[in-house]
Image 1 (cartoon, rainbow, N blue to C red):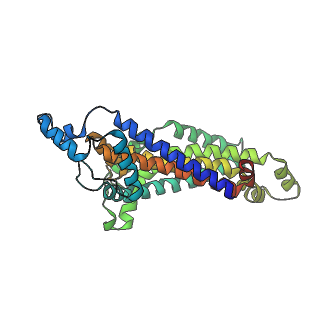
Image 2: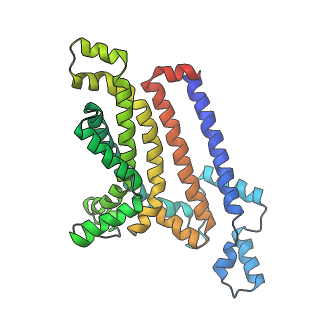
Image 3: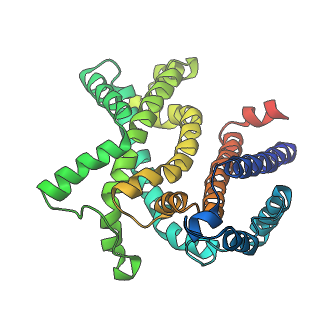
Length: 316
């Protein structure tokens, strides 16, 4: 296990370094200047230059990159140009909404996908299987922001069960907060659960055709006992792969959904910061999302080795 983890940690560090370079360079080549936008079109060149010097925009690119990376390692992310407050405080404040939203969406995705996928596989080529796979095909084709609008029209405008947007804050209580996040979580989970359900069905069907499964059935085990005792563990490897990718994707996918529901989360902060040319906020938020993707993939790789020792053995 030691060499396996060592290689994965080296890959993790190298990927994070590469991601930081890409994020920095992409934002560097964008046209415009934060100082010009903050001062307005009527500002004098001297005033714009003075503000650029104050913000550190006149430093060489490599020096700004080094300060940014060392700041991330020490927790000093700098101050927002537009909000005049530490970026770390802004991100922590917004993550208190975005992370619960992503967790709710992932929980809904996992429950819906596993139930639908396992049921469809257990009833292969029957009416329930065909019907559910048809629904999942529709789910894959629907963009989550369009589904979010449909949920608002049905549950907020028509039935008036939920608010059409906004967030009361956790200070108002956990239940009102979760109620405000339910529709956004459903809009995120619907598409992802459709994808995961189809992959779960395919993985379960593939394992059910293995010789050891037929042997278990021949020994007298029921279909349910065989499914839960022999099939699911081996079928979980491709499912866990997609779940890991989806958990990071759901965190990034909140950017659009939070704007649809007018939620003050990390996604809306990124959107507003792009509009304000607040690149220091955009850079740190994008790097955070990239880090989440890389770290989740790292843990998925480790979980592979726990579930299937053959993965660890073949990698050493």
